[in-house]
Length: 291
Image 1 (tube, rainbow, N blue to C red):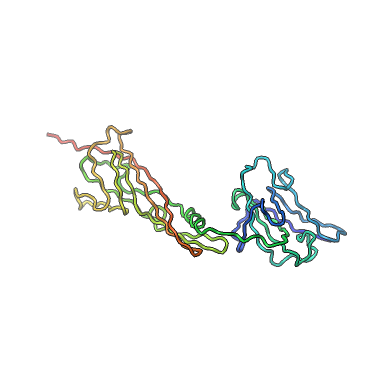
Image 2 (spheres, rainbow, N blue to C red):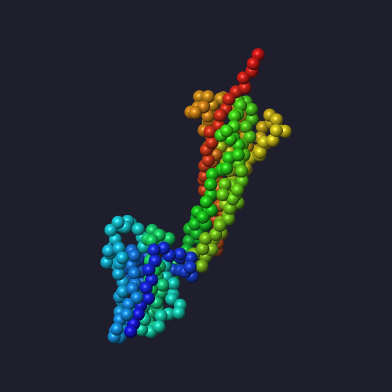
């Protein structure tokens, strides 16, 4: 009596696969194609002397060949393979009629829209090992950056609730954290390669809402009352007109940070740039002198 293992899943965590290799269903070694929600069913086959490819079906009304109404036809099917260890015993239907030593059985994980999308897992026999995955370290670097959740500047000054005065120096500065200023470090791995990236804000450009632009190469200096009417030594602006004529009687101030990311891994190194933005509304008035 022969049995065949079933492997069905909606979401598969591919991190559990050691040294995966990737190919596309169009080029699947051995002519294997993935259908959405395909499944392999464990069955008892009384009296059958040899394993036959079978037990493949579809739970979504497709024929198991990958066609499915409602699925974006442009979605690419990505399959990742892991050599089954240990190999199934002789006579297992996983061999699809072949004998141990004739090719090998692999755990195949296929996903749509990237292997993190809808995913199925099944055991397949391949005559030859699938092609080794070629990993671009720059792609892994971007993946590491995407995991950092980099944000725009956390503006400490000017404040939306503050009241500022024409001719009085305004000090601008930001709060610093891993996600709003850095440094922020993350890694990504695939195909035996690990890339580590470190991101830090290299500059912040302030659009003051009155037509002026101020570039600050640091987080700015917090103001203290002992500074009096002095201008900021690192990041400041002096308004020459009130915000009375602006929408909502406030200047729209925009702080745009440039993140510089250095990465290395896989025998390579490089640099990436990300830009993030934060807005604040600032009210600027003038001192009324009573004579």
